[in-house]
Image (cartoon, rainbow, N blue to C red; front, side, top):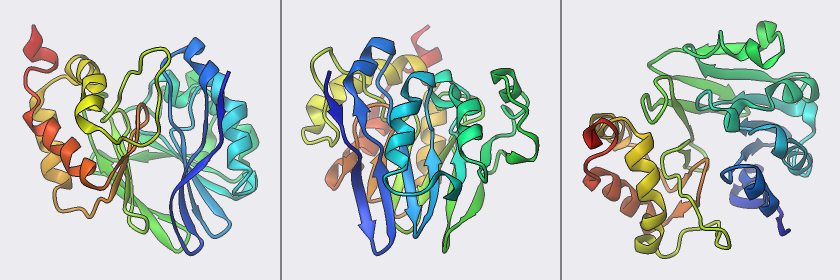
Length: 250
């Protein structure tokens, strides 16, 4: 078992975008997942906090940067169990948190066994700017990538874009790295996921058009590795050129 400690992807003053570590034994419990924390001063926003098996590790990592009572936002991209599976545990540990998820999925979350009450906030299809710290986090519509109600999250201070399942890579058993260095080799690990889990090319094209004018310096997906520098553009160009996904394979 190899445990990777949290890593600060970007830091500017008292504002940070942080990857919350990895326990490689997680590969015995499913596909490896990434969780991220945005810190602004003593406040925190948690992105796709993950399922039951990773809860303890993620909580311990969060507490290295902010107190649980200072985590203001719990932001979900979609409804998959590797995204929301530990929600009832998080609600117990984060007493002041506001939860954001697509309005399509809000009514399903109580099936996880918790009455969320006024903590839950529906995101409309067109997205929203969510106040956070001295700035905001933008919920960017990314519907059908791969969920029908799907959002990405952009931090305009660090210029890091959390892309949910876009950019997902499936590693072979003894291979893993946090930052993409060789894009061409990494693309081989992404192709199978994007062809099967993304329903159609039109959804990709609409999303790429939506984000084309955003100042994105880093892309951080929920699975796989982080894109920095020229690999940000290489990844977006790769998606544009990707043919025959989802329904087009039938």
